[in-house]
Image (cartoon, rainbow, N blue to C red):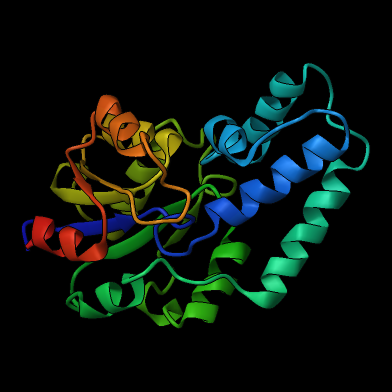
Length: 220
């Protein structure tokens, strides 16, 4: 292994949730009078934590959040928390293949409750222990600031410069690159359409991987 520790984003890296979530956001905004495509939703909102996400929605619609916005989001969260979300192809086998002694963490804009529930669903909960960090809960500045990644590396006891980060979203990749780690832009989820790789390259990721087989080669 080239690296002393590995840090994963979660949505769009370990579970294929970005398209699911942004499909709901786009449908909701369109229904309440703000026509939005899934692609526009992903471009505007993907990777943002609560207050930054809410601010981005308000900018997009040019006004305050609709009265039932939080109710609609809570209903969607309950649905997917109940049903579960499929893993990114190859994610489970990749995590299971990592040496048990290799420090590993999750650093996500989602809540620890959300992360833990879906780790349980895909069977990876035991691989991360208490090394699960949320931009909502563990730092003042969430992504695209680098703070969450620096927090995760410190908790793992590894230098950020000796760490590798897997990120899929432009917001997350911006924070990951700013942290000083080696950053792999992962374009493996259903949300990674044409042009996604180029966006991540322009942000300055160290490498691009289209699947976890490529990730394994990059870190070996």
